[in-house]
Amino acid sequence: MNALKAPQLANLQEVYFKRRFGIETNTFKAIVKVLKPEWRATPTPGAKPKLGLEDRILVAFEYWREYRTYFHIATSWGISESTVCRIVHWVEETLIRSRRFRLPGKRQLVRGFGIPTVANVDVTETRIERPKRHQRAFYSGKQKGHTLKCQLIIDALTGQIICTFFGKGRRHDFKLFKASGIHFHPQTESLQDKGYQGIQKLHLYCRLPHKKPKGGQLTPEQKAFNRQLARQRVGIEHVNRRLKIFRILSGRYRNRRHRFGLRCNLIAGLYNFERSQGSSVG
Image (tube, rainbow, N blue to C red):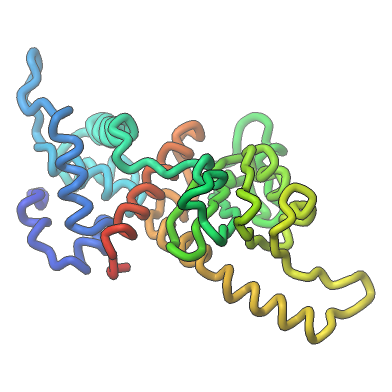
């Protein structure tokens, strides 16, 4: 089977390239620029690689985007399964070392200058294969299955992802927040859902939806407040959707769990990069 190579794929229209690989062509060019100094086209000793740098990047992103098995991707590109595995890991680890697509980090939340005036907090879950040991720690009652949790904090005004934190499916959202060591600047307003009951003890300038009392009803004013808060918080749901166009995050995660955070942070960093470039695709 003759696989399409990078020059042919690069000629795809922007919208189709985004659909195929989950990133824009400008992002692809930026990644090539970052990885080129680390790439040796003719390693010594060793055989000449079958795929060039651009092709290898596309293999890694095709894996993230479609999350097919190494076998299926290997047959599409005319290489072996082990080669696909090595390519994906090399691209991931080299991008992380470059620090080009890293997140601002939780220190950004307490800096006096450039702090987000409104921070949006939410947790998204990704199903995993049933663990062989310690299954209970990963079981999420909400999802009715074993999951890994990813906590996102975004700037509600710019949509930029500021930082992430990860935990096992059983851990409650608020406990995950406390474990993350996040501290908001006193002037930052934080928005969160009902899973963060108790955050008002840690950060006074926060907004939580009203919880219906047991055996009672919410007042019209409380319902109106909840609707307004939901409209403001919907932005973080859109961010979750954009991250999960990569099926490695939206499908059942089959890989080793210790690489989950690395991949989430890379995808979040790429999302921020495209956001800063004024992306309008996807």
